[in-house]
Structures are given as C-alpha cells and as structure tokens.
Length: 218
Image 1 (spheres, rainbow, N blue to C red):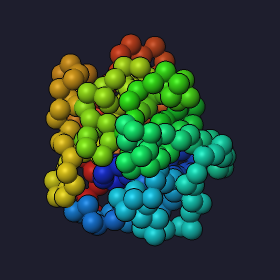
Image 2: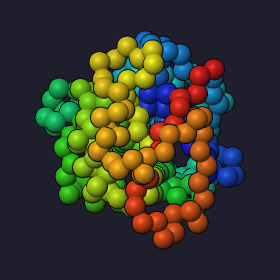
Image 3: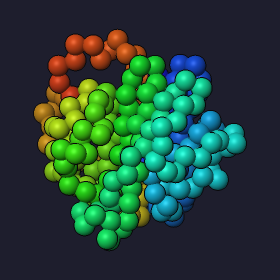
C-alpha cells in the first residue's frame, strides 16, 4: 500500500488494488493550496476548514464523517469518537479517529486529537502498524503528548502531521520538537511525498521508525 502526504493532516492512502482514500482535505486558508487529487472515499475527522474541504477531491468519492465500520472494495474503514481538546470537547468539540486496513496493514489517522492518552482509547485503537499523528500542539496534542501516544500504541512507523510547514499560517509548532523526543537513528526524512509498505516489512520489527514526508506541492 502507498501513503502520499498532501500537506497538513491530509494523506492519500492507496491499496495495491487501486482503491484509495483521502483523509482530512484542507482549503487554502491554512496558507497553501490543496493539491489536485482523486479518490474513492474521503474521511473527515471534524468539520473545520482545514480538515473538511471535500470539494477538493474529485472522483465522486464516498464521504465518511461519522462513527462507522465500513468496507470499500476490500478496504476496511472504521472510526471512533475522541475529543479535539483536553476538556472532553468543551473547547473545540469532538474528533474522529479513523483506522484503515489495506494490504494487511493497520493504519491509524488521529485527526485533530487533543485529549490526553488513556487506556480506554488505546484499547480501541490497537493494533496499529502505521500511525499518522498531529504533533504541532495548540489545537491538538503537542510533541510530548504525541510521544506518549506513540509509546503506548507502539506502531512500526510514525508519520507526523499537523505541524507548521513552510507557508502555514496556523499557530502551531514545527515538527522539530516531536523529532527531538526520538533517537536520531530512528528518524528518516524522505525527499518526497510518497512511501510504500508491504505487510512483510513489519514482521519482526523491533522499534518504531519515524518517517517525515515532504508534502506534495503541485
């Protein structure tokens, strides 16, 4: 399966069969434009402008914006409720966490998760092979809280998102603080927006690898 980083919290996930899902498309209010993209489905973690620009995705996709257990041409998609803040949604409301199973790989997109790590939430999310996690703080968990989620979920691969990239107008931190919580040898910065995985790569995995993708810039 392939993961393509489109910027902010937006990814395109594509199974080897060709079935694709775009997560949390954004609009240009964040400071840069959403790339042109086509998909079979779009998932929306919450209805904020930087996560629900459904119109930016062509292909007449299925829209998934609520709790679900859904199958799309063999791709398993599920969503559970969480909170966008540390006060049980009183400040910024609820947030959906999406899980996908593609080519035998479990991918988890945490959306704009803002609540502290709890055993109850961890149990709902396990197992996780690839974790897509916000790290910029302010509107979501910060670097320290994100690291706790990583330590508790123990994914094979972590891909950070929702941090201040070049051109971003949001009051969030850069990815650096999050990266500093890991050993340098466990961090890989890719000179591109895409990466592919097979189930076999994760067999016998010993430690978590952090992969930083460069957002696609059309």
